[in-house]
Image (cartoon, rainbow, N blue to C red; front, side, top):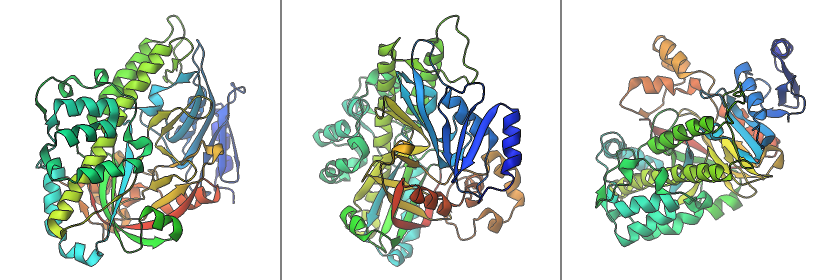
Length: 479
């Protein structure tokens, strides 16, 4: 079925110089005056809105080319596709040859998803909900968590990620981790994408986190963050692939804990640094790209590309450990309230990374890897289902999948209009949102997001993923 008013939209975009075509739930787009560029493709359900700004951002991404060598060979986008604030559409995937694009990752480096399950009945959890929530509010909102650690642990965290961090903690445990089962944490490393370890270096980290002193206290570590980040308690509502679910330790009726967070201020610091460095490194006398997306040429400056990837890896390592600690604080409180609860890790999956794939590098912005056989975690809103899936390794979409449902209303729009809307119209009826700021409930209301079911169904039909289990929200922490 052709989307409503598509012809009118295509005519309007054509007047702006965009060549847009539609076939089988896939839009293709590129600038008409650059016919030699690759077409960017967007997988989108028929009835979903098509935002001209996002299509322009995707066409601009396909046009990124360094004058000293380097180009884009493929661009695509997943069904959570919508405009990004920094000039790159959310849901974009770009494959590059001989260049990397720091702006295509941005500052929310290694934003990602982590999923744990527990053999804890929902009714038992709800009977003790209030005590659990108060403990978690202390850790997540009021700073009662203790994640202070020796300086050498921070060095190891930045340089080797989860593996280095856990090695350091096994040698000298500190803070809340003194109560943790560090052997369990070490055993779960293989359930983290890339084992939670990328090539990083302390030279890229914020200065206050690499001081040579006995103990470092980082106010950003083990925090959820703003925006669409969250920690959510769910239950496994339905299992569709029982064989794979059993292999991953997932069963119907289990409690689940989903964490969506990233590299926090470290990513903001490094992302901002390299946005500026990429612009500064642009060839003198050559016009700036209209999109303001500045690539780094591996042909002209291989050392600069290597430095950027190392810096990105530094922030990514912090993101992996941040999610690990958010989960471990939750697991410690579960044991405090409910006794000996194991709550094993199912998987930890990143978004917003540049990785060596394809003909050079693949950068995903608001999208996640979905390689053959790899677990994929796609959340809905705090009022709708989330999904555990398995990747199908679809090369047409760079072995990728969406990272969520995708926004359909801006935070500004909801903040401005939300106070005059009902709980029902915002989708907040029955939603248990734990936050210190009422506006967060409205900004992140289910009405802000596209419906998750067609997002999932479209990707299943296109062969990107297969559903393993559907999860239903119980309560959500929003900072």
